Image (cartoon, rainbow, N blue to C red; front, side):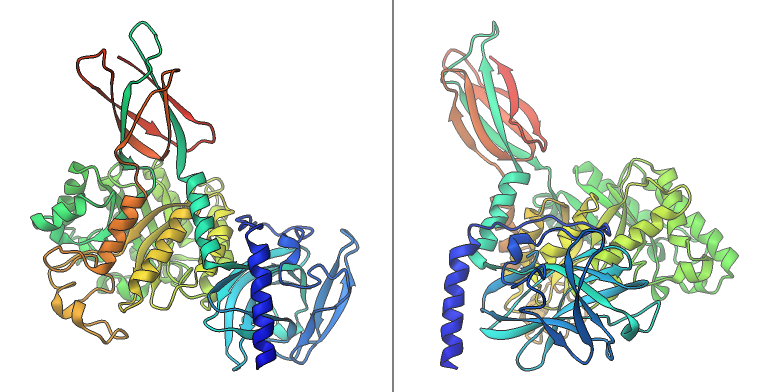
Length: 597
């Protein structure tokens, strides 16, 4: 045991010395390539990452066989697991890992191919007690290389074994598949380095230098002009779920308007809410909610046009024949989209259609793609979203791994007429388990490689003593990632959802009836600890009360968060200050704002 502790100490010293010089690499691809990229960080902790030294550092895992092969086309070596007997038969690499470090595959990255078909390959870390923890998955194909990106964190110093498995085989017996691997890498980060990388990314993608040029009316550069900058709206949108209580509860209205830039209705825009019975549409509450948010300049997400789960569709819909389901569903699309076109900033067209298939079973395999096309035709300016759970929360859910999400996007776009359809990526984020932050970042990387905007659409966390820390960790991770454009915190308030009974209950595994997992305020709109975290982050991510004076060139320069601004400027020669507005959008070069007195 003592020798293992010495190894860990030496290993930690090595990490501290090398990690700071190698920042996190956000690069990823969802293309299946003719040859893999070179191993990042020269492989990091993985010895012999590109198999230039044969199979050194690697071993067989399970009952199959392994061998080294060389590509005829790109002249690189790779490792093959073949003659496999079980799903987990593959190859492995052993590491000594340390508590409180993030281990990520790119940062793990590895490139995979199989000899026939297309299957999901998952990476696992096996702990000394035999526990297998999934740390990433990829769809591997025959004839090209696909990139797996994932990550993990451990809660103690230990020796672990990295191995790979084909758990679900769709086109063949999974033991018949050969698994090929090449150019693997594993990169450790301390928590301080992880946070520093977040801050670096925020500084790069959420901020921009602004130069305020102050001149007199005749163009003279004014030195010593006083400049005050205040942000009035952020480009990065953070909103909340909401309930119908927003319509007539003044306390709820004041609290919401003072904090959020967007709203998602928990239920009040869904089909089962607006049409309880056939031809019994009622938009009274929904209209009132939309009107309130429009009056207060708060964006509304269209959640949702349809929901693909059988149990949430009305009883009368499920009793209809397929042709009548089609008519009712089309009437619903026409009703909701025409009513709120121009009033929403995005449509969840078919909610959770990777886990569910009600409309596909009733109307055919292209049902979702058809509805996306119809909504696009009716409202061509509003972004259309997919919206799924477990993408980040539960890596073991292979239905919604990032590569499956990309596959679903391609499926929708393959429908005739949808070829160039812009789509956006909705990830719900209901974290009932501890978030795996390195897996979250890797998932953002893969999905971000599509070039499509990512939103966290329903973010909440299990109640308990660690909730506030998990909330802050995921909020920071999302805000820092270049591909993420918005967050909806799932904190729709009701008088009974965050009362004393809900907040004091200590049975964290069972949610009390009527209570919410994430409460930002109590029943009197006093902040909870989670509410304090939210307010802290919003203050940190906003540029306020920046005051300075122009130099001899009449310029005042400051790096500010992207968004809309109020600018107040004055000069001793001018009797009163002047107020104007400007907007800071994303760009590499500084924004020049010219004003005159």
